Amino acid sequence: QLILDTLHENSTIPDTRSLVIPGQSEPASSQEAQITILGALNSLLSRDMVKVETHEIVSHVLTPEGSQIAAQGSHEARVWAALPEKGQSSPLTVVELKKQVGDETAKVGQSRGFKNGWIGKEGAGFVKLVSTIKDTTQLDLVEVQSSGTLKSGEKDLADLRKRKLILQRKGQWFTVQKGPEFSTSTAKPETDLTVEMLTSGSWKTSTYKKYNFEAEGAPTAGGALHPLLKVREDIRNIFLEMGFAEMPTASFVESAFWCFDALFVPQQHPARETQDTFYVSDPPHSLQPNLEYYKKVSTVHEHGGFGSMGYRAPWSHEESSKLLLRTHTTASSTHMLYKLAARCRGEDMEGDQPTTSKNGEKDDGFRPAKLFSIDRVFRNEAMDATHLAEFHQVEGVVADRNLTLADLIGFMKTFFSKMGIEQVRFKPAYNPYTEPSLEIFAFHPLLNKWVEVGNSGMFRPEMLEPMGFPKDVRVHGWGLGLERPTMIRYGINNIRTLVGHKVPIESIENTPAPRL
Ligand code: PHE
Image: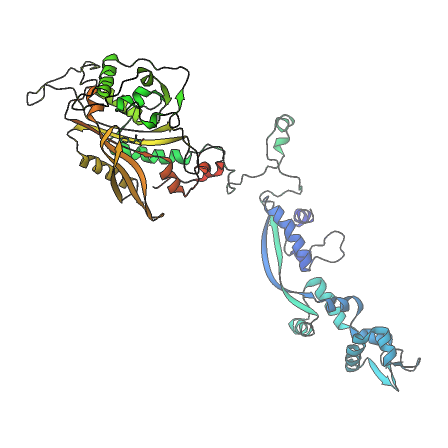
């Protein structure tokens, strides 16, 4: 308020050391006072009420001894004051003097008192030699205390410094002008325009807080993609780049027919047992698949066909019509392949009748396809740090005439290299629905070992031919988990910190987009 009032009267404050702070008799020339003034200036500055120019100076403060002298006088002055005047009463002995002013003051004051000609010896004691003295040390220190310096100059300051009565210190003082928002009122500026201000008209005279365009915005509470979804997007883009189309995979519940039988998985296969597969009890049975196709599938299982001897075990319709949570996305791929073969079966042509090819052969309706899916599957297995009862599979399927195992390997090499995995190895494996089958291993540079990343193979004729595919059509496919590459990518070693209720929400918000 003092600053604002002074500016209001004089329109400028050339030197803040000349301000007289209310309640003080002397101008605010000390550094302590300037620090107080700086606090007030900063708060006015933030509201653009003043403009300030800072001046750096070298200033001085008193040491504890200096402060004592400023208050009580110099040692020599105190000694002088304690002594009787010459000839008035008996001289004071050293012992008496020490008693009155203390050892230190007696010692220092005595010698400086002699030097100044203020005191003298008389017999065994001391007396005053002059009736008045001028205690310049005290006067100088009082001056330094209030102004931080001496008018008499650097020589005297240096002397006081040498006597360890004052210390040099960096200081500041300020020149103050009115700022663009100058006003004599320190009332808080308004931050909102209210209905009351509009109706009363007070908005015209109010001062408003300025926008701070430099301020950092508050973090927004927006949604964030889960790391699995980010990796899924990454992999989806690889497939799309390679010309694959995404399969519809929304049906988590499948029949055993589509999940196993149509894939030529024997009805006695251990994977179909309840400890591996979740069965659905209500409704108890699936709808009947296309009867002609169903008969072909059951026949190839029971008696063989298409060059196969079949499993030669009795077919169970009951087993085939069970409903379950799909154990692999290959159930969806099988659906799609059956649909793809529709043209070969002469169905579902949508006005596109079989044609005759260039070399005069009749078009058998087959059209090549590259399909992929990334979706959820379910397995009834013990959960631990790396296994959950539900997880995601990534699956690619390619259908064309005369594909070979080399085509499959080539596809996978390209696919994995796009995922950042350059070193892949293939190991012969067994799947009921593919022959040959290959497990895929990738060298992981961080783990410094080969890790299994997927499974693949050429779908068997027992699966493809009942659908109606011509004999020269080969379909190969590969599948991999989504969780494992994601865990490796983000350095997560417990699946529960990636999926489920124990996932820290910040990890979802803060994980960067992946580079596999
Ligand atoms: N369905 C297989 C699995 O669950 C993966 C696979 C897909 C294998 C396609 C061969 C062909 O592991």
